[in-house]
Image 1 (tube, rainbow, N blue to C red):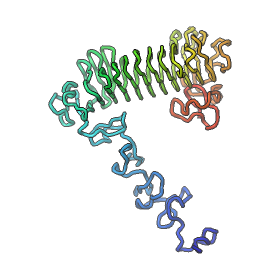
Image 2 (image 1 turned 135 degrees about the horizontal axis):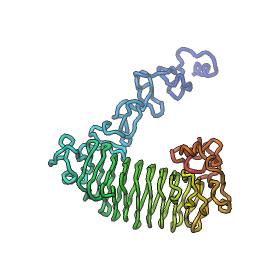
Image 3 (image 1 turned 60 degrees about the vertical axis):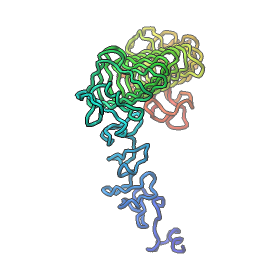
Image 4 (image 1 turned 90 degrees about the horizontal axis):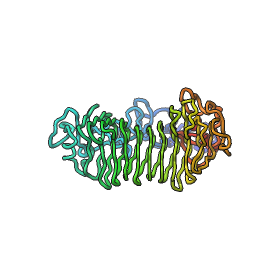
Length: 441
């Protein structure tokens, strides 16, 4: 004890007094590990990494402490040990899974006994296994059970003569980045009350015009799906995540959630609607129901196209931190925003290049930035200026904020904490946020 105290006071450390007992004692980034009582730069075994937060294993080829060396050391919610970073993660490729199927929307590998396999060049049989896949959905659904509910399509192309409406409580229909062609009818339909269907990693081409339909209190999730046709929710719930769609419609007290996706026209009547971190290129038309629209980029090249209509919305509705831009450069007097008083309109950039009156039916934008074509009497306490000064490159369609943009630091605090790209908002912490979908670093 006496010798250790002398060392702590700056006297030369005796040889039998260790410089550390754990990695927490090693403060230098150049020697962060405690090995045999000394702070060193590299590890030699797992014991050398004890006390290193999140990195309890030694990767001996590099001498670095890492999060995992193999999948057996990873938790069930992050079951894959990344070969490059040696960090436990969810799966995002089929070849990371022993079953050959990663359920991306759930971030896990499917068990082999959960999966029914289909393939374009396969032949229908009574098993539909990975070794002997089936050709048709009819054969695949015939062998599906509540426990074997994953239908995995092998290969880059799969053609259907007609669409399918599976019977059963739960299905996960998974592609291999597959292009699905359908010659007749709606490609995938959910029609049973309480039914849930997930579609993942596919592109759907539907000759009949509708790629996905959901009704009767059922639910469909599209995850990393590209729709080359329309999606329709009629009294059901439709979710899009990291997906693309042409037109999306909702009616009859349905639910529409679109997140981190790209879409054209969105129309809703009497539905609950949530849009977050999306890119929209068509008109947003919502009548009735509660609507939350945040962190979206809404654009058009058509000077005659109206932008946003939120009419008859219920209390608690919000349109905030969106960037709304028309690139035409022509004043077509189209409507940039129509909404009723129940909608809180906050911290948006409205640059639709239109001199049409800003609002219809009584909503009042605040903490927002308007382009110079908006009539002065409608600006109120908001800010106004030439749209070209707002963005890095309006002509090049780069809508990130310019360094001197008047959009910086004028947003309403405490509404949302990230921007459309997931960056911290406000940045830096403790300041007022930027308006629009993008927060400038």
